View 1 (cartoon, rainbow, N blue to C red):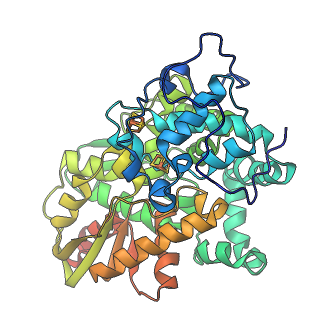
View 2 (cartoon, rainbow, N blue to C red):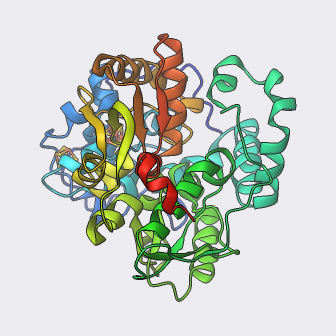
Amino acid sequence: MVVDREDLPLGSELPVGTRFIGREDDASPRWFGPDAPSDADLSTCVACGLCLPHCPTYRLTGEESASPRGRIAAMRAVADGQADVDDTFARFMDLCLVCRACEDVCPSHVPFGRMMERARSQIEPRRGPGARLLRWIGLDVVLTRPWLVRAAAATQHLVRPFLPARIRDLVPRRSAPFARVPRTTEPTGEPRGTVALLSGCVQDRWFHDVNLATIRVLARNGWRVVVPPRQRCCGALHAHNGRLAAARRLAKANLAAFAGADVIVVNAAGCGAHMKDYEELVGEGLPVVDLMEFLHTNGLQGDPGSLPEPTTVAYHDACHALRAQGIHEQPRALLGRIANLDVREIPNGDRCCGAAGLYNVTEPEMAGRLQREKALAVAATGASVVASANPGCSIQLASGLRAIGHRAEIVHPVQLLDRPSDAVAQRP
Ligand code: SF4
Ligand code: SF4
């Protein structure tokens, strides 16, 4: 069967035979292969519906089939042998952002992210040949090879005119195809130990300045920073899109690259959240910590200083920091230490911006609605700077703010910690 879910209306109808709870004794699952949502995971949902108001796709459609409970019910229908992994099933699963807002608020601790990754792995081999080819080239071929990511960054100006307008608008104009972060940076503050840094694939080519600021701030706070040369893309985009074999290959490559590291600091929320789940994916984990978490837990050495002039910043919570890693206070507390910086809350700031990995490319209509909502909320803060700790969110915010004509600089929070004028003299 080939899945081609183009233009399928969503609708509230769940597959015939869908059950919210319980299971037929003689059920014969319609899953295939080892990567299917487990019965144990599926049975954690008690269909209480408490997650529904927190789900962005349910909020915007009002459809049960676009809610966490409806999606789990659809997975159960397949597990019970009442429905197939078909176009309708694919539509329900593809419209999910995997923002994990439902997981965050669920009293039964439903592991929704894991279930969705496995449900999508069932859909992936059944997509049409065109969709499969594009995903294979983009995810399995390019992102898994650092030299191809460099080539993509170096040639983007040639490709840009041929991209559809909405995708062209998302691709940052500036990139650093040939820049390299230093392999080792000695501490300039009071020495405290060594950390390994994930430089990332997209992050290191299109947000190279963020990596440099990360190294400077860590070094200034007493940390020796090493960037292992054989590290690869974390595999988050592969896992979220159901390409679990490629995600496992990348996880194993990173387990080897970071072997022996006491702590691995990650400055991109999506990458950090995924790497914290390596144990679940490949049976072995890494000591991963988010950059803001790390700096907050260990404390800053001295005062971060003062910005040259009064600045307002709106802090954006990436879902994979807030929901998947429970990071909320740490960045706010760190930014609050910078003099002349006023940190403002974005109204409904816990709502997804619609970036969600490749979601703003694969589901432009829903992503566009969420993007506009977020851009208007950011503009309402009146802030001249937006701090975002995830490259996908930064891209989505920049494009959304341009669309509503609001000018604001988008930075990673570590770039604000790196910025105070009276700290510049200490930079390595
Ligand atoms: S809150 Fe949890 S248990 Fe309740 S419907 Fe949502 S996923 Fe199921
Ligand atoms: S992950 Fe996000 S979009 Fe998907 S069901 Fe949960 S709350 Fe809704």
